[in-house]
Image 1 (cartoon, rainbow, N blue to C red):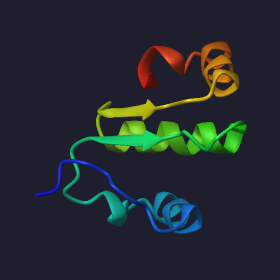
Image 2 (cartoon, one colour):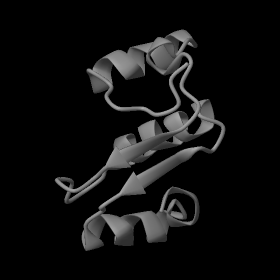
Image 3 (spheres, rainbow, N blue to C red):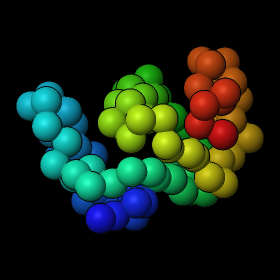
Image 4 (cartoon, rainbow, N blue to C red):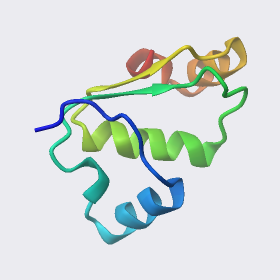
Amino acid sequence: MADYVTEINSLAEFSDEVKAGHLKSLEGVTSGAVNAKDLDYISSAGLRVMLMMYKALNGNLKMEQADPAVKEILAMTGFEEFLL
């Protein structure tokens, strides 16, 4: 059984799974981390996906290497307390 999310092939694929109510790409996964080193902005849609992943992993999701601008967005939206 996997215990770490290493890659989700397509954000659109993940979004389709969420809409269908079945997160096939997270089956058997118990925790995860998102490497945000190349991310300089996160939109409300991105925050929604992060929240869906967080819930699907029962709160066992972290964001690593976030840029200061992304950290600021996470802080303003309240996501900082559970993602960082």
